[in-house]
Image (cartoon, rainbow, N blue to C red; front, side, top):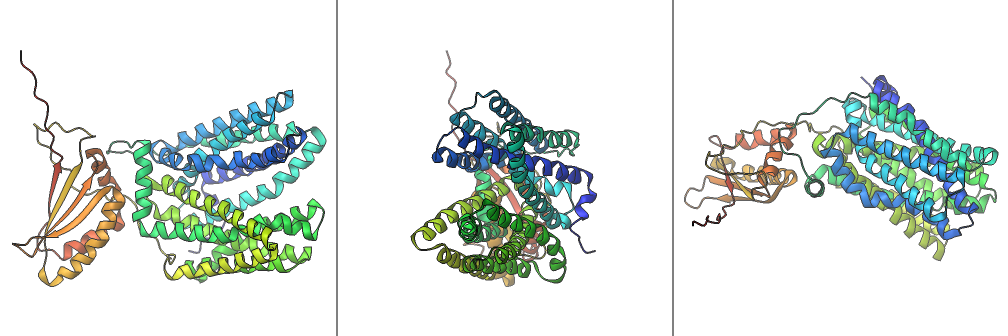
Length: 529
């Protein structure tokens, strides 16, 4: 059955959250406008005005990875609820200080940072729960709906803030933002998330963060998606980064800039409706590459044309192309990352995405200043189109692998007289294979894929060895830092990994023999009197 963009709305929790998010994001955009206007009203100077953006962006770079780790360790519903309550508390305090007149530039920056910190801690977890709210085949549509919601809020929020500030004062924008958290808090509080039972020991933040980086490094599919997203955003960032300058050159009124942004948002909404029909006709790679190519051409066109109506049409097309690519790539990351590491992988994805936007904006801004805006947009557009070539090396899959847990390993037997704690280690695991000589080459090729799985799921070292006395006997070895980490490995094996295990078994002549060895230490002898 063909997926429509509306189908995820059949899920009540997702539908309620989407509606609540519209009001919450409108409040966020209103708060951003209010903060910038308030800083100007306080006569703080251009540096403080610019620092409001820094205060909003910096928490995502500082807290994204630990936030992702917490999103996988803690109950995701409780973490989102805590973050929403924290942001509501900060928003109320900010509104009260603005209304009473006790606000200062540095206090505004500090509270803006605190507000954004809550968002940074929430975002990876928020994205990680999406596969729990909609069916797997609806993830692309759900991502597109989130894009529609965000762009509607971006179109409505700033304009509404301007009207309310002009009519009732700047404090109104902060009051509305504080009230906008009520809906999300109410929906999350009512959500009855199914409890997921874990048999392995809980992870700690530092170890969980390292596990995330290791997973991305050794997961070929996830790594490819992150590389492509980073490359595209590095070049495509020029479009929005240089748009204010382009708008100023064609229209001296700020209405021109707002109009172009509005058309970009409207294009994103239209692109979300185009996405599903396109996916039903063409492959994921074709649709994503076409979106990137169109976005690159739109970037070049923005530098060429100097007519506001023409630029509006170009931005409409560019917004549609952008949402098509970002919806596809985000949905794929959510599908390829298993539940135990999903929030952390999304945190890494968010870091690379935001880093590409920040670095690209700086690079293309500097190039535009030293040459011309038209030249910068031309090279950025060509670079955006060129990133489609990455599809030859990092092709986007049409079907994703099954990453549901497949914990069928036999639990290790522990001798009664062995004092084994969870933090004992390191642990050496050996697996002995008797391989059919005719399939030895195929066995070794499969074991190289198995190496990726072992390293991805927690092994710090891995090797495959051949017995010199019995050439058909092979020994796989891998080291894990602790007994607790090896217990977690049992829960990280997926159904997709099981297919590789079956292939390896088809090359062997008998059941593999597994041994677990713990690092031996000398215990201090007890002194006798």
